[in-house]
Amino acid sequence: MHELTVPLQGASYPILIGEGLLEDSARWGPLMGAEAVLVTHPGVENLYARPLAEALGPACRGCYVLPDGEQHKTLEDLNGLYTWLLEQELGRGATFVAVGGGVVGDMTGFAAATYMRGVDFVQVPTTLLAQVDASVGGKTGVNHPLGKNMIGAFWQPKAVLIDPITLRSLPEREMRAGVAEVIKYGLIDDAEFFEWLEDHLEEVLALETEALTYAIKTSCASKARIVAADERERTGARALLNLGHTFAHAIETEQGYAQWCHGEAVACGLVLAADLSVRMGWLEVQAAERIQALVDRAGLPTRLPEELGVEQLRAHMRHDKKNVGGRQRFILMHAIGQAEVTDQVDERLLSATLAGVR
Ligand code: NAD
Ligand code: GLY
Image 1 (cartoon, rainbow, N blue to C red):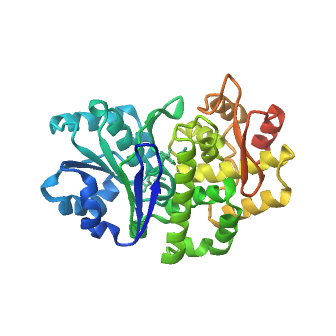
Image 2: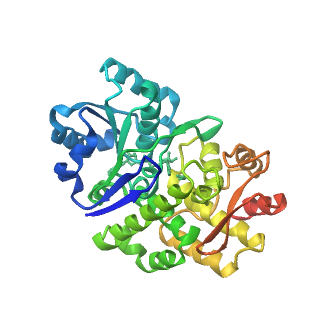
Image 3: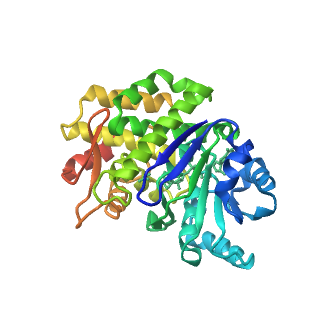
């Protein structure tokens, strides 16, 4: 079993990682508080949430199943959860436990941040994407038709429990999507990890214990370090985690959150960010080719869908949360493992990237 810490002032919390962790209730039971409710998705309920509920025994006050899919990550769908929580007469002492992917985690976290002005919550991520990214760092929220994750709060979990065995039931497409966020960490500030991924990608995708655990642990350690440096994304350090996401969020919003999954959009966003970095004169063409090759080997999209217009994507990017004082900010790369936030992007180069990578 591996234990990492997200070192935040007054609110540090553990990330436990290990195959078989969810079977070990002696290890995680005390983290759930005296009264817990589980929030999950239909495909995950019987596999992981119900066994957890059973292990919790009378401390479990119930299990709420959110409708599946990014298109249901809305305030409207969250309201069903608030109503159920109130009907159960849950008080402020309750702990909300998110069992599922990033959608369940983001929505449960936001419910925890807002229910009776804030209750504890624990993340039990069951997709690779949620295990390496979404469950750590306390960004919670829902989408709005005008933009992704536009309504939300920073609300840190009390603990993150990662059992890689849960990935055995994950559809292959979702597993590949999670790899996009793993690649991202190598690109931000860890060239060695990027190289390791080039050598071990197939082992990770095949869920080989050693490689998979190493990929999850290294990703979580990166995320914990970056979040600790800039919990509320004020200095720019945390914004680096959004590498590829300015493009990804525009794609997802334009697609109505219903075509590509988040990780697929991030994968394409990484290739677009590399292309723009080359056009800006920051990144060598050979490095961009390595990035595209790894994304491609992971079975992820490297080109924008033809039907998405440049102007529509640009319009979504103008609403990006990172923008400051009307200036658009992008995360670009000087090299693999050397990303930087910039508001100096030439509009013509951006349009050329959007028009060219198809
Ligand atoms: P998801 O939550 O939609 O899960 C993908 C699918 O897999 C769903 O159908 C789900 O029910 C199913 N599933 C989950 N675990 C399973 C398992 N073990 N076996 C079988 N099926 C399983 O998608 P995701 O990729 O996990 O998360 C994407 C979301 O995460 C996006 O909304 C994104 O914005 C958010 N996100 C948040 C952060 C953050 O810091 N808060 C970071 C990255 C992404
Ligand atoms: N996934 C971006 C962040 O957590 O800041």
